[in-house]
Amino acid sequence: MVAEVEAACRDWGFFQVINHGVPSELLDNIMAASKGFFALPAEEKRRVKRDEVNPLGYYDTEHTKNVRDWKEVLDFIVEELPGLAEPGTDEFRSFRNRWPEYPPGFREACEKYAKAVNELAFKLLELIALTLGLPAKRLNGFFKDQSSFMRLNHYPPCPSPHLALGVGRHKDAGALTILAQDDVGGLDVKRQSDGEWIRVKPIPNSYIINVGDIIQVWSNDKYESAEHRVSVNSERERFSIPFFFNPARYVTVQPLAELIDEKKSPAKFNAYNWGEFFKARKNSNFKKLEVENIQIYHFKKVV
Ligand code: OGA
Ligand code: NI
Image (cartoon, rainbow, N blue to C red; front, side):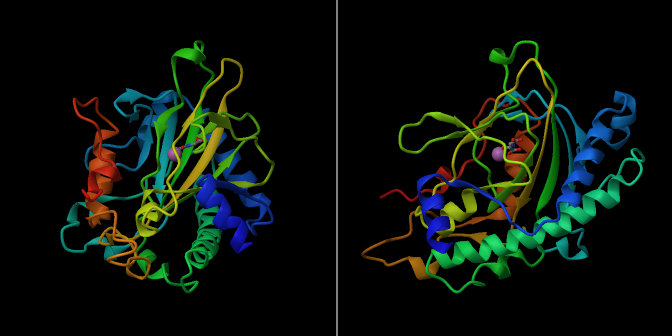
């Protein structure tokens, strides 16, 4: 399995897992909760709308690379920690989950699912550490006080699907993404060998895993965070649920010391603070800006 995960991370940055240990009823329950929530009237959904101070909750105006996405979402964090008040991260203390009143059981379905997927995330993290020739638990410490969050995505049918994207092309900024999708399909991954967009075929009760920017930096470019996007269609609405597995906000992200050798394989990135990076990216996702949003290649070392 380590060899298979290593090949998938290296050649694609994406893979699917089955027999993953997340009970299927937890996924069924959160999918039903998500459908129930997005079917509510707009004014009901806006009761849990995000605002400038607290970015969690419902919104339908996210931008990717300054272009508005054809979707609506609800975000919640996985661990609401008093420990978020690390130096320089005070504003994160205002992050609080907003739970809608309807449908009944929404919060419980989300929390139970998040707990199970979080366990899967740690199993995958340990596998990936092994693929890098490191002890299984080498990366776990970065996830004490983790800043992971879960997103419910709803992509409504689009009358002109060739003119819009559910999510524009992008790379996920965190460590790992664990995505559940329904049977509609629409996620396209950019193949590294030739740059073609490849549609990921939905497999019932499976998860799509992708390497994020942080693992790219930790691995010093052994693995690349793959570009992907979401296409929409005019017939069917689509639901997906990514779990963005992210380290603590105070973590300094840099190539792992064990993988660096001054002569043979020098570090390819300068260090950066995860909380600052996340904040800069998040803010830009709600505005049309004149400038490109933050990317890890801004931290590439000049050689
Ligand atoms: C994302 C994303 C894929 C999907 O939200 O970052 O890539 O299928 N979503 O919804
Ligand atoms: Ni993504």
